[in-house]
Image (tube, rainbow, N blue to C red; front, side, top):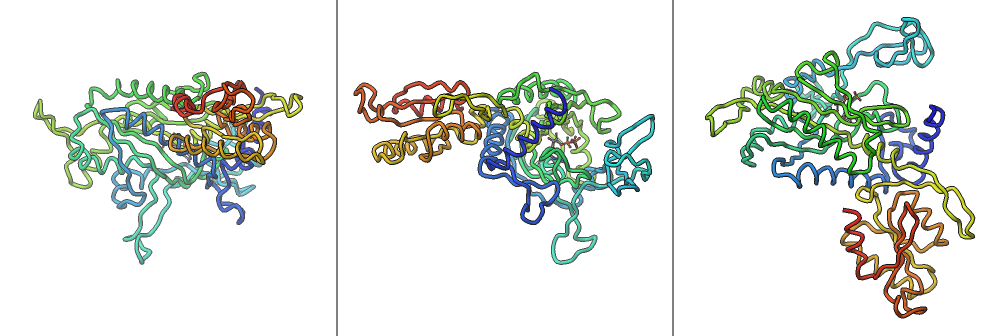
Length: 453
Ligand code: ATP
C-alpha cells in the first residue's frame, strides 16, 4: 500500500474510533489535552478484554507467575535508585524558526544537515536532556522534600516489592510477577493518535531467574509474546522482531528485542522484551540497604536474581488491534443491492461485544419477549447487545462496524409459527462470512462460549 492510502486508512480509523465510541480526545470540549485520550463504551470493552486475556495467559494459565497491583505514587528514592531521576531523558532540540520543540531523533537530515521536520528550518538549538517524568508534590507543602513523580513504568513497584512477594508466594526461581497499570511520560511530541501518549497503560512481567538462564529466557519470552499477539488476531506477517543494538540498548541490558507492528503510519514498537540482568534489584538493595537476595535452599547460596522483562503497551496494542481489524468489503442492502460495509474483524476473544440479539420486528411482542429471554440467557457468559430498532440489515451493519462477531435473530420460525420443527431455534450470523446457521436456543450459549474463549 502506498503512503497516501495508509494515511487515508489511518484517518478512517481515527474517525471510526470517535464516531462509534472507541476513543475520544481527552477534555475535548475544552480543546483537548495533548497526549491524553479517553476510551468510550466500546473502547473500554476492547481494552478490558485485552488486559483480561493478557492476565489469563501470563498469570492464570501458569504456575510460575503471580500478580500485583502497585501504586502510581512511590517514594522518590525509588526513582533515584532506579536511575530514572538522572537518566530517564530524551535529547530535545528547539527550532528557532518555528519554535517547535522536537526530539533529537525525529529531526530530518538533508545533505548531512539536520532540519526541523515541521518547517525545514536549520537554526536548531544543541540537544538538551529533558526528563520525561511528571513531577508532583505529596502533601501540603510544595518543595523538594515533598517532590515525587508519577511512575513512568510499572516495573519498579515489582522490584521494590520483590522480597514481600517472594515470601508470601513461596515461589522458586524462575518465577515472575505481573502487573497492569498506568504509566506517565511527559513525551516531547505525542503523536500518531494514541501511539505515543503522555498517560498510558502497561502490561509488564518481571520474570526472575538465575544469571545463567537469562539469555535463554529472553528467547523464550520473545516467542511467547509473539504467540500472544497471534492469539488475539494480529497476523504474524505484520509483526517484526528488532534486535536492539548495543548502542541503543540500556547499559544494564544484555539483550533486548522490540516487537514491532506494521501500523498504517509505519513499523513501530508494541512491546520491549529485555534481559535487565540484576541491575534493578541490585540498585534497590544498594540504595535502600535492605536485602533483596534470594536464598537457594539446595545450594545454600544467596544471590540477587536476574530478570527478563516483557513490557507491552495496552494502548498501543489496542490501536494495533483496531488497525488490524479495520476492513471494508461489500454486503447486500435491504433490497439485495451490494453496498460498502465497514467491518472490524476482531478476534472474538477480544471483540467488545460478543453477540447482538435482534427480534425481527420490534412491534411483535412475542418476538421481543423471546429475544429478551435469550439476552438474559447469554448475559452471565458474555457481553450481549440487544437492538430492536431499524431494518435488520442496518442492525447487522451497526454491529459489523464495531466488530461484534455474532448476531442472533429471533424470527417467526423461532416462535414455531411456520414449521413446528423450527420452534425455539434462531439464526446465528457470522460477521465475517455473513453466513447464517439455524441453531437451537438451548445450544446457543455453549456454541458461543466455545467460539469466544
Ligand atoms: P518508545 O521507544 O516508543 O518511546 P520505549 O522503548 O521507551 O518506547 P519502554 O520503556 O520499553 O518503551 O516501555 C514498554 C512499552 O510501553 C512500550 O513498548 C510501549 O508499548 C509502551 N509505551 C512506552 N511509552 C509509551 C507512550 N508514550 N505511549 C504509549 N505507550 C507507551
